[in-house]
Length: 565
Image (cartoon, rainbow, N blue to C red; front, side):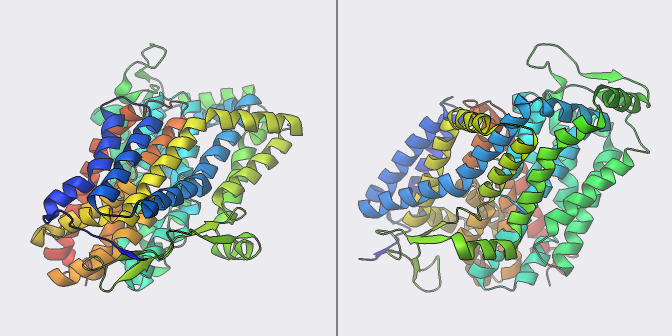
């Protein structure tokens, strides 16, 4: 029997929305203020979500449990599979000492921690976001940053902040493609509109990132390098998204940004080298103050020369080899044609019995009743995590690991990330339950009551969607149709508001529980998720509001309206 979602069970949309928000408040409150371990907080959040769905919104208990199980399965593959294998690769490089050589080579480019942050968290992370998405960039860059000596909070929080502007075009344009599919809006129109919103923030985020790390004065000291990194990312992002499409936006922009910054560093050096690895130059975890040091312009060249004396060419090649192999395979795994070919021989589509087509979305969330599919795609070979696993094995063989040692380190890695995997499973179970129970749509409908201010609140709806689901793709699927319908009712551009859902959503990426757990796992700081959340929350909400203000001006204020019509 099909169950139709109920969006206002209390007869007052505001009270219904407060009830719908209980699971999110419980989970985030336990993490941020209760100092509870993430897997306990996620378990309590899931329990409260089940209670709200069944007793508050009238969802049949069997459907509720099946929706949670469906989400849990998605948490294991693809999300958990990515986390497990990237940590496995990191463990391999630590055990044989090549990660230490990698650290030395990066400090050879620059000793300045602020510029290292730009290169790795912003540029390198954007490449992985464009090629793979789904947690890969934070896992990779946070692991590298912690290996470079950054404090766990700095490595976790800053990589989350950096992984914002590229998210809308992540995984070779998947979020935009999904948005076009659910709204029926032309793909190129959506790609171009997002590409006329996000470049401003692609320029802003590197400045924001360094300000969050080194403070305003520390940011001003390297503003030319930040400008080069941001501008060389924003311009290709605009050009590719508007004149080519959403598929290669991040990949092209990240490569251009990285190359531009490295070339710029050949002709420009900061007057002062910032050597602190903690936020705002506070003491490092070891208690040793190392804020910044006055060094001559030639110091970085001296550091590079010293590094090359310490490590020969073969050692440097071997240190970078695992990450080059990872980059190559992740990129290959992200190519749509490759995925289609591999899926043709390996994918299994499993209808989730007891949930598939048994939940129906109804008006006003959709124009006509729509049954929600629940088909689990077991794409074990085409999953990004599989590409990372193969890259790890290949790199391990090239690093001269025996099969026995590879197996030993892999099982040790599973034990290392066991609680993180459990947390991801529980959080995805919670996210899918909110989707199938309709409680997320109830929250969305509250935003639709804001009238002329809807461009701002509609953008925040995208932020909320990503914060709840952990995915810009999922948030676009969740709220894309609602954005289009509401825009048409208010006389706004459907293209503008659908794009705003994605552009606003990217700022929610840094506060979604899944990303925070990935960051805490990559930095070996599991159990401190509350500290990470408290650090990034202001940055996330402030940037989302700024995106909303831009969308508001695009809707009503000339000359910004010329970017829409």
